[in-house]
Image (cartoon, rainbow, N blue to C red; front, side, top):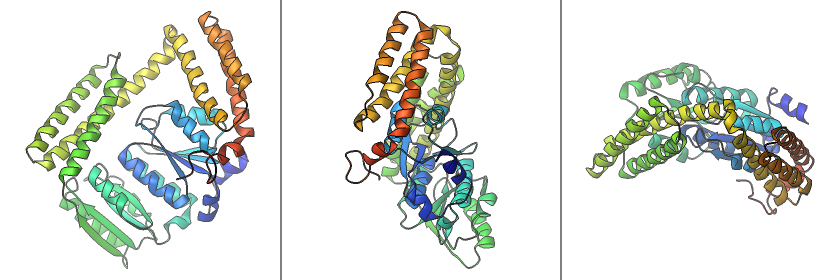
Length: 383
């Protein structure tokens, strides 16, 4: 099965074949990536699992396990969806692919290309919605448009736009969402390029104005990202990140003041800028934590305890499905005792044994686990 699924990532699948598989799309809560993930999931009848941008959480891996998927599609690069998830999927022998670019525009293009290659049927009569890739309100508006669609992001430099539009050979219905972040020149150039490729199609435009609700949601989003950045920067000394965090907080303050003055456009723009600064902090802090945890001998106890915690989270998934995990838990108790006694070799060996046993149980019992999450089961149910 593993070889067949890997082959399936190369040979194009029909929509019917794709929908017969259990596919999970793993994506960060980045508004751009998550929007295209949800649209793709709708087309493929897949499930979406969301992780906090730039943050690894073992509970997210456990959520993926609950679907016992045939394949996982990771949308977003390692900065957005940390490599820890890739490592855990490999340990569990779950086939996966990662579709991403150097930024949200590159990721958008890579998802588009791979989707066309693997699932060509999906783009028969698909509706394409074009919006600025950093405009929270426009992306939300795009998500709310009814019908079979794919969202394409542009910036005012038209990054990747020519290459993206070159893939739209089957498109006959295009909607351009004009908003505060997309200037008139950008919209005009997009129209021209679309007309060259979609000669007999329907090209429409919608103008978006920044509302108080949009501005406030942007501020809340920026505050949440900044709080995450603060938590990740705690106990780390990264001067560049500290400066970026200060900038993020300043822009949030300006955004709040502008909102209270009724200047919603300015509040909106400042909030989006604050969010971008906070995400840069998260990126820097994440890399630093990886360095600290991988090279510091003083942190060996902590690293081993983290491995045990990750396994305990996964064990709960098996227990929920009624699978006997007594032996695995006994081995982990042995590992904990070894850590307390500073016997790190024994602890590492026990942890590796527990990992192997858990993986084997997961593979053997995947049918039972998946049954927990199908209609009529006692799990979450597929969205």
